[in-house]
Amino acid sequence: MLNKIQTRAKTTAPLPPGERMKNTKEITHTLSTMRRMNRPDALVNAAGYLILAEMRLDPANPAWRSADVLFYSASFADMVHDAFLQVGFANNAIPTAGFADFEVCLTSLQYPRRLFCLADAADAERISRARDGLCERIVVISAEPPLDAHRWRIHHVETLSLAVLNALLGDTARMHPLWIVAPIAGSALYTASKTTILPQFANRMGVLGTETAFDVLSHVNRLRAEGRDIISFGLGEPDFDTPAHIKTAAKKALDENHTHYTPSAGIPELRAAIARYIQRTRRIPADADEVVVTPGAKPIVFDVMMALVNPGDEVLYPNPGYPIYESVADWIGAKSTPLPLAENRNWGFSIEDLETCITPKTKLIVINTPGNPTGAILAEPLLRNIARLALKRNFWVIADEVYSQIVFEEEFCSIAGFPGMKERTIIVDGFSKTYAMTGWRMGYGVMNRDLAAQVARIETNIDSCTCAFSQIAGIHALDGPQHESQRMIEQFHERAKVIVDGLNAIDGVRCLPAQGAFYVFPNVTAACRRLGLQTANQLQAALLEHAGVAVLPRTCFGRKNQGEDQEYIRLSFATSMDNIREGLRRIKQFIEK
Image 1: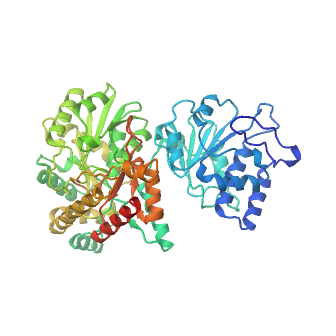
Image 2: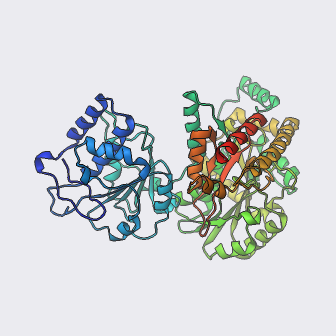
Image 3: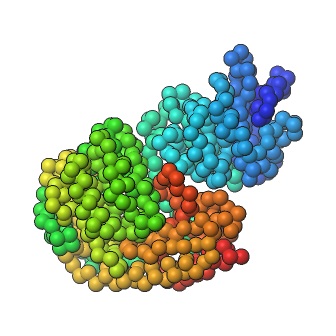
């Protein structure tokens, strides 16, 4: 048996050499034996983690004077305790559960010891907030990602194996603590088949984020496959079909063999149609040469940052906000700086807040109106002041306007329409939301000609071009009948009223009206306290498990801002009115039980 893992207060002596497991083969045999004994997956999973933690020690090396440290959440106590006993530990050698001494241990951790954490949602948030003592010898395994992604090397692993964990832990080049986002309980860690050890992933993968809404969607689909009745307010996707005339145009384009390469910037006819659309909806001049068509709107964000931002330049992005802004900025080596949005400012910010964030290294800011996840619209006076600052301090603006046509009682205003802003603004828009074309993957950017040429060059290198027959359909979407889209927007407005009223009728929940898009972002702090929960992440998990309702927690949209002490969840009302009413009933029943 390998050295015992150190408990909080003392270093335990190693077990006799004859009792040590000396190699992977022996560990593999133990886990295989446990599986043949029909031990539950969760137990095999925990045992695998703990044995692997022991493997990191080399008793033959005099430098290893003490064993690694293990912290694990109290919610995993039974599982971890059983796992230790199963692999031969005595009761008094098993570390106690909880993270009470975590911060103290961080500041006293000495080489060559390593600190392993098996963390549930609440403890994952606590670890994320740690400021002192973080180093490359800290390893966290949790189903939740950290709140502060830039300080960790993050790996998302759907199915862990000893080989995968060995490879991750053996990466001596990493400079940040390691956070492995993976299932802990209820899924198997060990896979019996041989796994080839491949070269490491590039270091930049450690800073690439993700859009966790898709993780929730996968979980919802798994539960539904098991027969669970789940109401999902998770993914931001219209529940309407693409209008018939758009689909007909695509079919016709296929029959006419529009199935070949196109110019990287998009076919001239579609770019001209987009220019006309921008003229109608933003009331600014636009030309086809200022348009680049891409497979979805995300590539515009990526391409523009790649074209404009050097490593070390600062990119300001709204927080809470669409997670891809921060992810791409980090990926290209920029310094991503959150621009805090405040509930008491109707999910906006003051111009003084923005001025505080701007430095001489600020190269670009991202604004999103109407906003995801808040459904808020940035008012015209604020946009005017942002434009004034952009001219004064000389930075670019990415204006994410993909929800620009889904507005209710407020009027949409584009920052590109203010004097001097068209040249330094990149409008991001697409077909997914307004025309229910999420699966078609077609977006576009509108920017000055010189930048458009650079962005098209990046597209040549990455995507070559956007699907030809989809582009033909896009022309018909913009120039054809708009009544189906308008009917969809009207229904979103009705749903917004119902969901806001319903949420505000639940004890411990308060929700601002939705001004646009199809999201609400209620404050659930009091509801969490009522249920004895510390975070919105815990509420999200509880609603899914016990009420059959899927929502997204605040941390899906960026780590909490400094001083932020409230809890929020996002609900997408891109679902039927019947689902909205039933989902609200379930949430109310669960919180007020």
